[in-house]
Structures are given as C-alpha cells and as structure tokens.
Length: 189
Image (cartoon, rainbow, N blue to C red):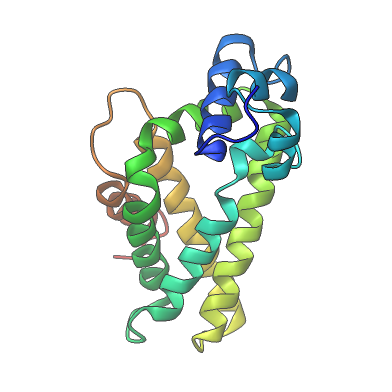
C-alpha cells in the first residue's frame, strides 16, 4: 500500500460511505475503510478518531462558518433573520456542492440510533454557538436562545426536504419556506 496519496480525507469519506451503503455502519470496520481508500489504518487515524467522525468531520467547520456569518451579518437584522441568512450563505458555500455526499451521509445517520444521538449532540452544540453569537451581537440571552432554537428547527425542516429523493431545489431556496412555515405555526407573520 502506498505511503502517501492525495485527497486522503475525501477518499476515506467516499470509501466509508460506500461501505456503509453496502454493509451497514455497524458491520464496517476502520480497516475496511482504509483498505477501500487504498490507505493505511494509521492514515485513517491521522484524520479521524473513529469511524463515526467520518460522518461528522464537517460539523466544526460548519459551526465556525455559521457563527462567522452571524457575526458579520447586518446588525439591523432581527436575530432569527440573521441566523437564517448565515444558514443560507453557508449552505451555498459548503453544502450545495457536496449535496450527493450529504444526502448519503444523512441516510446512514437516519439508519443508526447511535449516529442519530451523535447528530443531535452536534446540533445542540451548534444551537448553543448560534445563541452565543446572537448574544455577542447584543441580543438578550433568552431571545438569543429562542431564535437559535427556532432557526435550527427551520434549518432541520429544510434539510429534511433537501435530502428527499427527487428534490431539486437548493437548500438556500428551501430555508425561507421553512421559516415561513415556522412563523405560521407560531402565529407570527
């Protein structure tokens, strides 16, 4: 096996998704992922602490990008609108070009309770980070908490729609629809 090949992270992720599709997350080993990617297990562990993190590798980058966009957003925007704007920008920047991979990732997570719990934990961290960014913009903590939670619900609804088979609209296009539905649900126009 060669010592070095370019694009190790991407190759490991592609190999993992292929194996998760073929034989399930639980039955796939790190050794199999590394072998499929034509890399060593050591290379795998240089990039990921375990096979779960192959699926969650982008969480930190997404969080940083979203918080950065909230910090940079026009201060005249209402808290929910500032967060949704950040979600739209980051969807365009990081997710849309990787849609096929994200959809496959979502399917693997949906099929495994342990991974669903991990996803919920990552979403909770993101929600806390969004609330902190809103508070740093001058929003009172209670409002920041509510806006962050509401934005996450809208984002998750849009994301579920975006990952459905046959859906062709961009995540950016789906996010405003989710916010309108949220506002209708809580009686706000």
